[in-house]
Length: 129
Image (cartoon, rainbow, N blue to C red; front, side, top):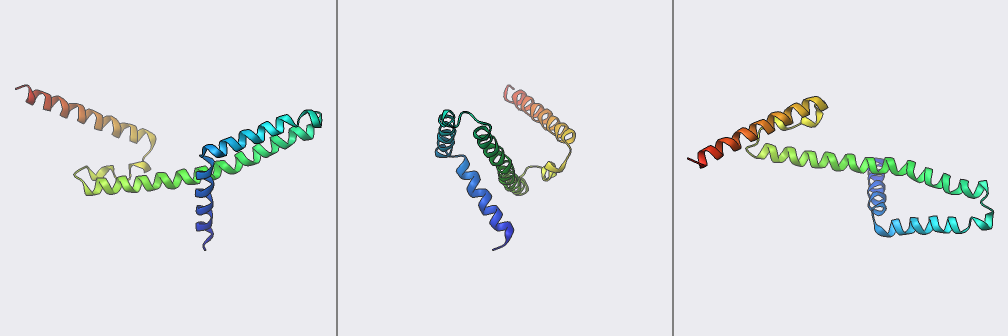
């Protein structure tokens, strides 16, 4: 199996599991268990270091896994939207706009909103005749 496929499978599995209620519950139990053991360890530096190190490592790794999953989901959605635009009567110039700058996308959005508003006003005038 290719390393890319292995990583994709692992990222999907972990991202999916991280979003479940049972995972949240297990994390709460782990934090409570750590807190309860505080008096037994005299709230030592080592006791505090355990939770700090654990949460830092988990957070660090999860950022990359979740970002990978979101990037793939976003690309898949974009490809589906592009195909819908291509197959419909919509303007094909909208395909690939995710590669524009933020300013260019904002200007395009304003242009489309202006055209929609003008079209709605035209239809309203025609309906009132």
